[in-house]
Amino acid sequence: MALPRSHFWPSDLLPPHQAPFHFLPDVQTFAKFMLATPAYLISNLSLELEQLEQEKRLLTGPFPDEVGLNYVLAAEEKVRQQMGKAAGLEDASPSLAKGIENARKLMEDMEKTHEIREKAKVKAAAQRKDDDSAAVSETPSEMLAVQSSGGVNASSSTPTPTPRGPKPRKNVNPAPPPSASSYFFYQAANGAPLFLHPLDSRILLSHFKSYSDLPDEIEFPTTTVSYIASTINDEVRKRYKYLSHLPEAADVVFVETGWELEGIVGAEGLKPFEGALKSRHGKRKEKERKEERAKVRAEERERDEQLREMSTWIGGGYARSTSPARMQREESPSPPPPPLPSSRSSQSQAPTPQPTGVWGNRSFASAIRAPAASSAPQLQRQRNNNREEEADEEWEHAIDEAWRELEMSSLGKEKGGAGRGKKKGG
Image 1 (tube, rainbow, N blue to C red):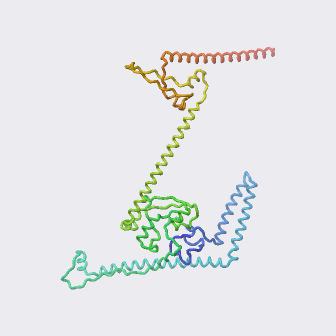
Image 2: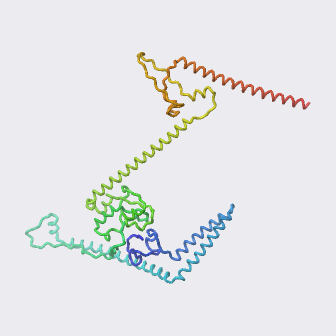
């Protein structure tokens, strides 16, 4: 069990290694287990009954569900039985009722004692302040002048009065010394699994000298702190023994404050740890750069995969309604453009090797975009284009003729049907 150090814990009210009652301070926020009173059990079971009643109204509405209703009725009966058992706990176990009463009474007494001690501390601080003011007011003005000038008046035979300082006072509420099985650490005030990094804890311990003198609460700005996520396992428990109370596979976060602790320990308190702080900062930056590079590589792989899928889709082709000549022209690579006229006609050009296979070693997209060398004259290409256009025209003409014949046959059937209808009517 781990609870915030206070005037309640550790104490007789909250022993270090015993399960506390739920109503004690900080228990529901930080404790991983607690003892519930019968009244607390009954209140939670009553809330479950209300939720079951709402579910029962939904199941008996316009669309009833008999199976679900039977399940809700059985659960409701079970909850009522548990409420009866919880109500009889105090009567069946007098020691439980006595323990609850003693815990409540001890908590109230400790709260009153703490208020009295706090008032005494405030009164003592005000008294010391008044004593210091009175000591300064009783000092002669000549002595104040000598002290302000930094010299000593040798001709004066009057002894120098010594101002009274504050008397050392014993701590009226000393923290108990840590046991061998207890650990001190800092956690988020709302109970979240955010813990101060061990290096920052060592800085605080070096400044305050002992765990009992560490402040109960620390505050620092969170604008420049870093958060390191981790998961509880055997290795983490060996390194950070104060986290052994957390369950396996629980997520935790370490807060790295670094230079933000200067407001607590001062610049002198951070000097012995400058090297460690810089090393930790460099490791964190290097980790961030590695994560950024890994993110960029993952995005590049995803983009390459999308381009590969797109290239595969283009290479697979697609079908559309067109003439046979046009389909043949689209399936074959387009002829290259005519060569540009050169002033040096005697210079020979080496022919580009043609890719092997139907599409060669490249995809369809790269094949239709790659220039291919050709030795056919421009006139031959023009003739081929003319032939393809003629074939397209013949194909379209044939389609038009077939469509015209279909329309003529349809009109003939309609006229014949109308004539037969008239003859039958006569």
